[in-house]
Length: 210
Ligand code: HEC
Ligand code: HEC
Ligand code: HEC
Image (cartoon, rainbow, N blue to C red; front, side, top):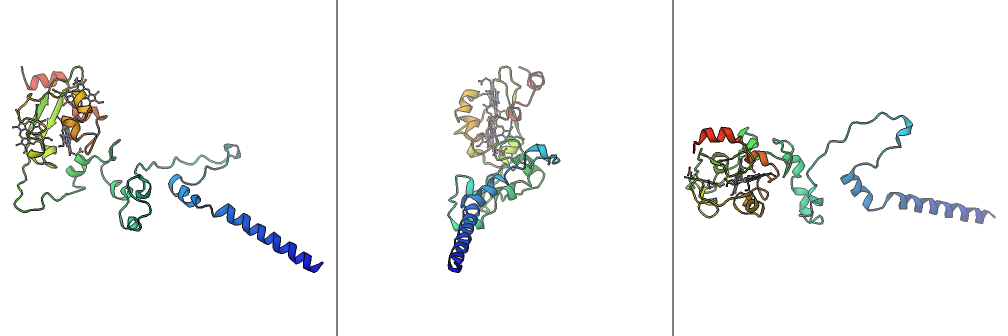
């Protein structure tokens, strides 16, 4: 009898431990907590005050960005994009940083050259591109471009250095030509129409009488 009781008790203990392990130790649990947050709370009937919405953090964790190998132990040495980028001037899309504003405000001061003999040429010249149908005219500003790029990045492979001399249109830009070589790839995305189409037509025609 006593032996039986010990047998039952140890069987129950074993079962309880097994249930505990099965319940808590599923390998996905911690991971999904880290990426999705805690499971949603009780149904609303229990009079719990509504909590404010969780802040949306748009940057994926390095281990979940489908670019880095999550098994690589060196990943822990890298700074998470959310930590690095969330302190910079925000943008709505792309990588969620307005890099022009970040540079202008001094939030970042990137090194301009590796070799001392490299000449930095910042050109403060705006070019109006007026072939925009019903959209506001495009103002192409050299200054923010030449703060990041050299003349040779654009001239003359992408653009001939002459106002109106390039067969640019929106279709070709969307195909990745002209402005689309960079915008939508490494600089702000093409969905931000108004950052390029920034000058009302009447105002543009006053600036450059035909
Ligand atoms: C990176 C800068 C840039 C962005 C962003 C951009 N455009 Fe353009 N767009 C241009 C340039 C440059 C032209 C050609 C102007 C010229 O040749 O005089 C153009 C031309 C156009 C034209 C004239 C017709 C045509 O097919 O070329 C339309 C319409 C137009 N864009 C609409 C849009 C809309 C809508 C958006 C946003 C969804 C947009 N653009 C975003 C630069 C841009
Ligand atoms: C990001 C690309 C880009 C870079 C970098 C760039 N340009 Fe340009 N440049 C353009 C575009 C676009 C135009 C206008 C072309 C058009 O209207 O078809 C232009 C036009 C010009 C023009 C003609 C202006 C006019 O009124 O006819 C000159 C001159 C010029 N660029 C010189 C330079 C110099 C010098 C540098 C370097 C300091 C430089 N550009 C860097 C894209 C660039
Ligand atoms: C060689 C790459 C390259 C090309 C080609 C290029 N851009 Fe840019 N552009 C940049 C970079 C880099 C920046 C600054 C960083 C950013 O905003 O992503 C920039 C910034 C700008 C800005 C400044 C926006 C602001 O908030 O002040 C405008 C406007 C712009 N580009 C329009 C154009 C137009 C229009 C064309 C085509 C006629 C064009 N760009 C072609 C790389 C390029």
